[in-house]
Amino acid sequence: MAHPPLSTLFKVVALLNDGTIHTGTDIAKALGLSRTAIWKVVQRLKKYSIDISTQHQGYQLKSSLLLLDKKRIEDLIKDPNVMVEVVESLPSTNDYLRDKSSFRNLHFCLAEHQSKGRGRLGREWSSPFGRNIYCSFTYSFNRNIDEISGLSLIIGLFVVKALESLYPELHPRLKWPNDIYVNNKKMGGILIDIMAEAHGHCRAVIGIGLNINMKEETLENVEHSWTSLEHELTLKGDRNVIVAHIIRSILNGLEIFLDQGMTPFLPDWAQYDVLAGKRVSVNTAAKITTGIARGIDSHGYLLLELSSGEIKKFSCGDASLLKE
Ligand code: BTN
Image (cartoon, rainbow, N blue to C red; front, side, top):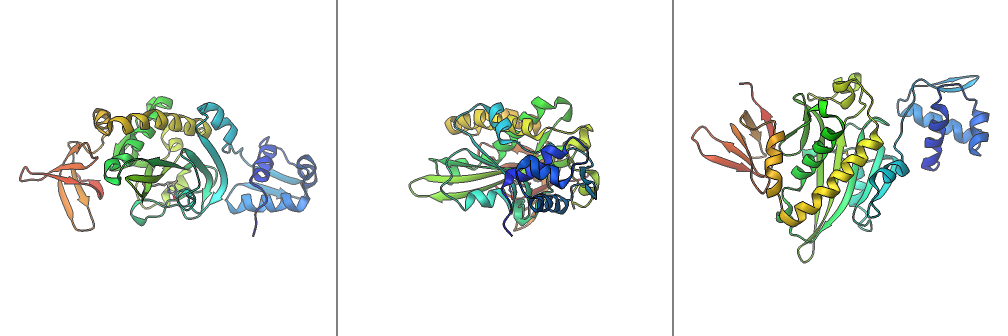
């Protein structure tokens, strides 16, 4: 079924955000639409589990919804090279950008909802409507794939730095390779799809998922130990401000990464590393290895000290903290 244009849902929410009851006729009149169009939007909001009551007097939102706002984000970023697109729902923001090679560099796509959000290693990424950040952007590098092996790690670092600058009391951390951790629980992650192109060029789609205003009940259904900004700090985060900070942090950092690679970021990464000095197990497709994590190298590889004293390097895998 074709959806009415995105802005309709956003405009209906803006009207209902005052918390009072609005009749379908009033909303339709205010937005120059039919009552059926408004009814359809309300049904969509209900499908997204938004608490909206429909009585014979009209519609009422139980609590206000601060949705993503392209203009606000662009005004906060103030960079003409950045294009921001806000979409109501997509299967996955990474897939959307990956499948369209016509998007130019620094095209940021943000969705309010993902129906097939992807995590690393083929996992699903839970993406309820209007609560979190699901953001992907395109970037073309005039580098071979192996020259940008640390990309997902430094993007994690830029995200953590942006979060810390807004919420110093959050104490966000990094878990190799690209998890955002708070209080030993996962708050977000990075997923990068890299497409090799001819003559040492490659195009990357960089996806960032962050749990912001995710409710506890929703978190309980997730397999791992998860958390969100709201859960940690008991406050509702303004996703527009958070996204703008993250984008700014990425823009500043990427330039340095392209110039100098991972090396300038290693001391910073070490400062946020939750695994360093801890006993961990690293799970790769081939086997599980245990040892003491000793940070990362300039390629972004995890260094693991085995019981023999040998340092083993891992380019990929899943790392878990072991009980001491
Ligand atoms: C992980 O497994 O830790 C990575 C999660 C990445 C999720 C984000 S949400 C935006 C983008 N679109 C997707 O389908 N996945 C990434």
